Image 1: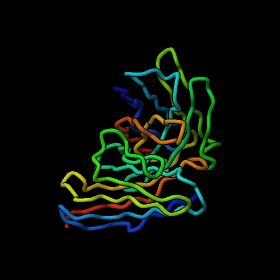
Image 2: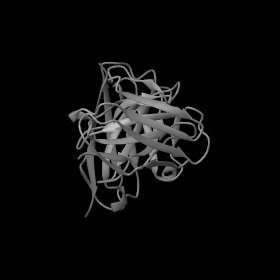
Image 3: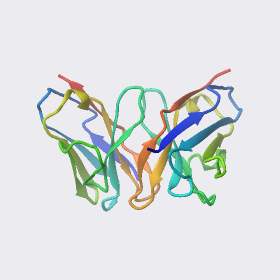
Length: 118
Length: 105
């Protein structure tokens, strides 16, 4: 059974960089596409970016200038960095696996709340 | 591509059948998936490619549609079905609908 687990600080100051890591267990990161999706409190879901094992990436255009996604296949992990954060970036951040045939998210982490506040 | 769900909220009773609609701002063929989300939990995949049931999902859930108009139907609602439902397109990048909250009447 594939499991994903997010980790990282729960509080980030405005203008700083948000950093999160997702650890994948129960399966290899060397297949599929690995994603970050966020959900502001009380709101809907927003896709951020994906990466595959080779480092191929795809970003949401509205966040592209602030987002970096990377992968460490030796640790079965992938990471997200979001720079110049503001209160609007406060959200639950999920990592998720994308099946790249008809492109659906089949496994998700439990999510981690990141609050942007001084 | 913008995804619009209707209704935004819905009240129903156990045993009822309900239908949720999702409309895309342009044709997405059948690149449409449905998720269920309960409070404090991650979304759970129900339907992929518009009408394919994900493994382990009860058969009372079904999806249909193509192009711009899609529906999620739940027959004979069970207590565990009261949740928020999201559609998601994967034709061009990935976007979600705003969600439909299904509440117990």
